[in-house]
Amino acid sequence: MKASVIIFPGSNCDRDAAVALQAAMGTPPAMVWHGDAELPASDLIVLPGGFSYGDYLRSGAMAAHSPVMREVVKRARAGTPVLGICNGFQVLTEAGLLPGVLMRNASLKFICKDVHLRVERKDTLYTRRYAEGEVVRFPIAHKDGSYFADDETLERLEAEGRVAFRYCDMQGRVTAEANPNGSRNSIAGIYNDTETVLGLMPHPERLADPVLGGTDGTKMFRGLVESIAA
Figure 1 (tube, rainbow, N blue to C red):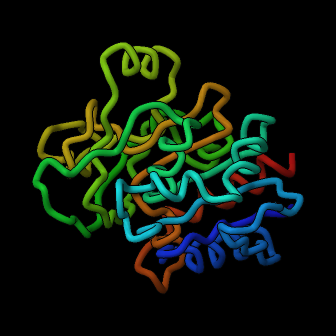
Figure 2 (cartoon, rainbow, N blue to C red):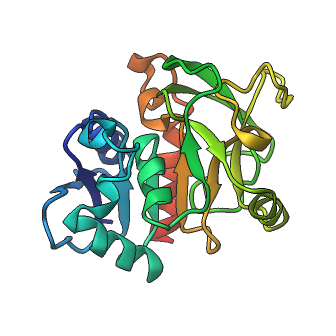
Figure 3 (cartoon, helix red, strand yellow):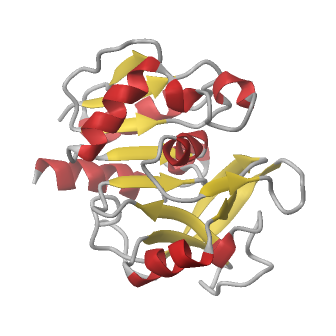
């Protein structure tokens, strides 16, 4: 299996993603600079977290127009799995690969802490190692992480089963108190219409090794490798 991690100016989780991928794949992913027009053969593309272009203009807006994104969009539309984490989720919405936008947190403050998420489905590339309804713990670190979409889009996402993760409490209950940023419907991550593109604000790569204090993220990367290799 071959994977590529895209590096933008201001990325700060590209190495974390690479370490998690290498642990799952057994080989290191290609690290691709945003200014490259070419993208190596890839079975998986990862857009990591960080603050691409310093979040100037709007989070992810400038990165979405980086030269390499033309090829990322082309590959995604041809069916190559693409995972966008935190800033990568913002880039995916700005590039038109996922609906909706990520807005300023309801508190108007940067939030950095562990949160609980409920896995909404287990029958996707990204969640095959989780159980439906399983509660996992991932960290968040963002100021613009409140997912917003209009009512029609939300209804479509819900009806089509495209909500990947929701913020919840330790028991899996979706409550306002467990929603750290004011996301509509407590949405923490969504799929595209073919379920090959996933964007999520929490960081699975930051809890993918016992040394980091947890391994809930490991299942995502190992499941991805298994799904793609199948």
